Image (tube, rainbow, N blue to C red):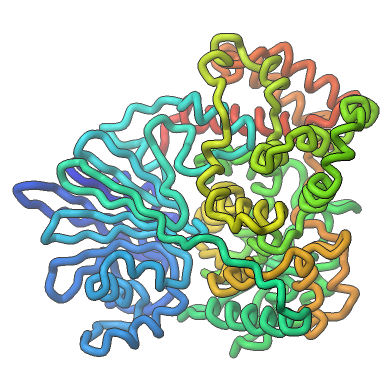
Length: 620
């Protein structure tokens, strides 16, 4: 919906707010509040979606003048919340005004009543305290930097890193984590001192610099083993329809990012059923055949749901151009090959709509990825696997990265250790060869710390796969996939909503037995069975493509040349920390198809391009 920024006890210049104007091109404001104990700046850039009038402008004060909010996102149940405030004389119809008074009346803990996607700062003039809040699944990012009694926060890192009180420096511990997982779990970022607020968390900051954190997400749902398949499907259908209807809440038309797969097709069907207007759908593909070309499938779905359809091709040159430009907006070098495609597609959609729905978030709660089949097999046969010569298997199938990761994960008997191994892309053995000795010595650490608190919240009686799904939904999803989804859609001034992450829907899914999610080799079982009421079998059982790109092939040619040129530069990041000759060996092995290193090489290329964007270039 918008961009937010602010600071306590340090100046926030107007030109720094301009750095996030793409998040809200409809209007912009920056206010300053002073007292003997504090100095507060609150900024906002507005993308008008609900209540397009002046009554929706921010930062917004209560009528008493004691409370102020700068808010990014949408509260889908704000009308229900407003009904609990019968004595308030509202100026307009915005969800911002609703939650401003709701927080005043019921306190900050009432954020648990919000169903939506959001990050915001809520300021109490009486106490001088500022509270920063991020939504339950981290759909909307929020960054902060604390130095003594000073705080800077923003929807995007560049506002903080550009401030004169911040000295730009790489966080080496975060760099090590990034190389393990290809993203940084909150609160880490690669900018030393700049943190991501964790999902379902709020930070309360006092004018003297004291601050506390609180997670407001309840413990995991207890699994209901007594529910029948028919009951489960019927309730899933009801909750998903409710989620789509909620997320169509808007005073402007809502479009759909349409892939060739099932998840977005279901959303398209339900949107067409519940919208008063013909929906617009948007698809991107690469020329040629293969899993990276889903234009024909998307076109067929569009005809089924009766949408006004827009599609575009990406040539290799266009892909690379958008890839290079994307780092300014993602700000974290998330190594996902789908990023340029989403960036390009968002640009297409922005010419028609301000809001889109997408199918992001369906796979994690419902076991949609192949790795979930692997975990189920490993947990079931771990006794037998421990007796097999798996290292020999790995050598025989050395060009199969999926199998190699499965073999690596299977050696861990501890559940959480195994989950972390499943996530790991650069193993400790690879790091010994990649890292310079001094960097390795400084950064030998246990990555468990990023996942333990989530694992501890899971139902201890649940099966291992249910626990893994719970972890993925609260780690990889918010700080990897949802992060770049927000950044790249908002870079094009459109808001991306995710109905599969409706709170009521996810709560329900997490109460279901795993057999209703993964049945044999069929992931998202309940979703596919429920979809039989909405779509033909040919759409339901299409092969999952998911914005695939030809990057693996490109690394056998041009992309590896680009990486070689970058690491050979005297001022490259790789030369500071890594053994460049080992990287060249990885490139040679990938080119000759002796090893599949596309993910690891993409990590290193993303890292170099990010470094060039933020440590070699001046922000504009």
